[in-house]
Length: 255
Picture: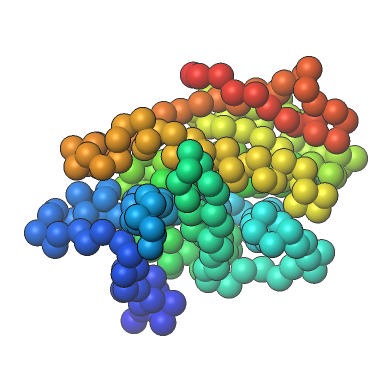
């Protein structure tokens, strides 16, 4: 029997502002179109809604990353997430309002029952590990595999090494994070939800990349919606523009 949370995730009503997706389309095509919602505000201005998921092992700091980005808050005694939480953030890009609905889920295995609904429609993902706990870095491959299985479109992915303020007990080097990201075709950045280092960059780089790609491919084209892809970019450290606090900063180059 499905829980109330699962039923909500699977059967939540569409936004009244969203464009209606014809039920005659195949399930695969409908899911691809659900990945990005475009609608107009009261003044007829185009707006976009992107779904982004934050994944990774329990206690890597996913909830604190999201609360720091969305509300500029940090809780040293943050409790493990039970089920799913999400926040909606807006950015103005090229005169258009771009909204990101960012989903945070529990990393514990006992909550994995919501997996399919959690990933459905996601076009961006932050894969988070804790730089002071090597086992969380070693789990990244499993999370990427799960993302590939359950997401219906090519997803813009950011590898995030969180808790870079714990430099004195670091267990994963910056170079290891960069190497994995380059091998998998991911963005890469290290962050600290505690002191805000690179938190905004991590989220907004993913949002901007999604927007740039769908904008270039003319989102209004039905043909494009059915063939939606997001290009891959690797991010590397920019030694000329980083200071001691932001030693994990990056610049981007096409891969």
